[in-house]
Length: 304
Image (tube, rainbow, N blue to C red):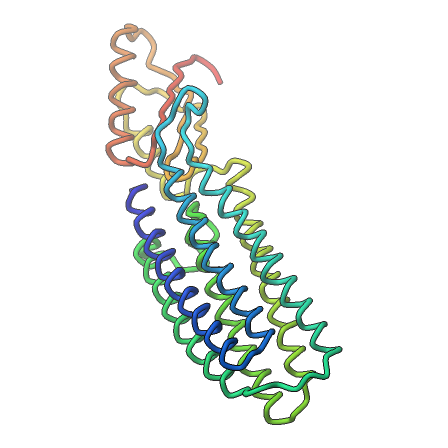
């Protein structure tokens, strides 16, 4: 299941990488064609978005490194670290830079040159970004199954898909705002609309980056497994022969893998060898039905 989720995340990252690279190349062409400094700045912004996908993929690959002596629970949380870095870059290089550019344009009297080129590039960019968003939503749909998108967002532990979805939505909204405000600038001849467009785009990017960072923060701190997995674990524990009571269970998500610890009460009078066999059987059943459980610690006890 863990590798299955990673495969969907990798595809979503690839869609976003291709879309952002295509947008960056289109903006670069427009910047060279029009000799526009602001369009070149937009191109640099898109190249930064492309680099973000590389960071997400780096985290995805590093998170599956096997445990070692210094990291006995593996490197799963590296995916959260790189996702958080991307959220910071989205806030700074995306949101703050766009707002700065907007305020700079408010005090600029330089007229727009060949605005139709900008509109054409934005239209192409919208198509490419829509391709990325639809691809991401398709991968999410395969994972969320019968859950709604809102419920999936609230419960998912897949940091990469959350980041890609947030980036895609922010980028698409930004492009639509840019197209609308640039169109207003062309129609009215008032450069204030172009400046306000950049500021509005920056606000959108900041809102999305804060949301993404907030979601990733809980995973960095240490969050339990998804409710669906917790339900499966509880069902197995309740149906296991020889277990009189389950005092408590603890799960922590480590990237694609989950650590499970449980305190159990074994039936009285059971021999130690039999109790060990029952616990081993319990662990085998759990990992068979929930392969994303990478570590399973069972503590037999008399009281909680």
